Image (cartoon, rainbow, N blue to C red; front, side, top):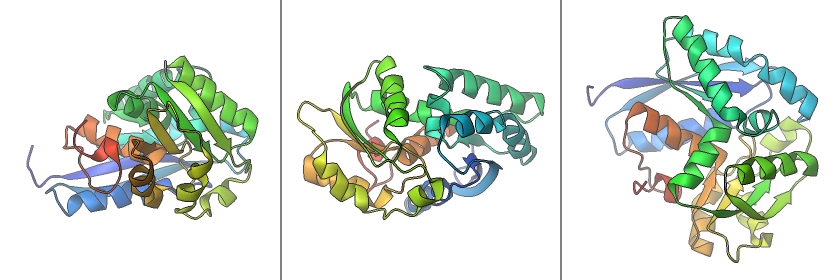
Amino acid sequence: MSEFRTYRIGQIVPSSNTTMETEVPAVLRAREAIEPERFTFHSSRMRMKKVTKEELAAMDADSDRCALELSDARIDVLGYACLVAIMSMGRGYHRLSEERLHRRTVENGAPAPVVTSAGALVDGLNAIGAKTVSILAPYMKPLTQLVIDYIENEGIEVVDSISLEMPDNLEVGRQDPLAPAEITKRLKTAGTDAIIASACVQMPSLASIQIIEDRTGLPVISSSVATTYMMLKHLGLKRAVPGFGTLLSGRH
């Protein structure tokens, strides 16, 4: 591969999502300052306004169309950018989703690896060796519990969690990216291997990642950081971007 190659990054996003199309590019633009590869960004949207189990299920059914649309653009990697949509469909569902959406790209003559934010979060925690975590999520408590059950089914214990109980996805996206740095001070972290600063692709947290790490001395990841990490891994590229936490330190 040419060291100056430009990679096309595709994302399937909820129609009301305003965060993943800013945070993933922000990390990769920062990477462009220190590495030769370049990136372009392309999205397809699934309708979703309220973060409820019913709307999430209806939205997930639309992901096949999005994968086809993005594969028309001959993307190099595809990210399914809705963590709770995957986790609300049942334990381990990210594996089924990734395989199915990849198959859609193959059928369209444009095979591309698929990363789900749900799978990326699990894989990111495994990469840093985390067996226990504390999490911050914007969801109503029943949806946060689905996330906890999903993560624990993957062999990672959730020690503590905070639910901000925001059902309106646009409201979630309007939160201050520095807010998690303050809110996570209320998390119990004794006996915790890592902190999830945002267990949601819509809740901004990128500006808080390094701040929380520096304060606690614990690895800190988020849905967007984990998704970017797995995209780079699938592309076979160096996974080192300073300022975004342990997972992108280059050690994993």
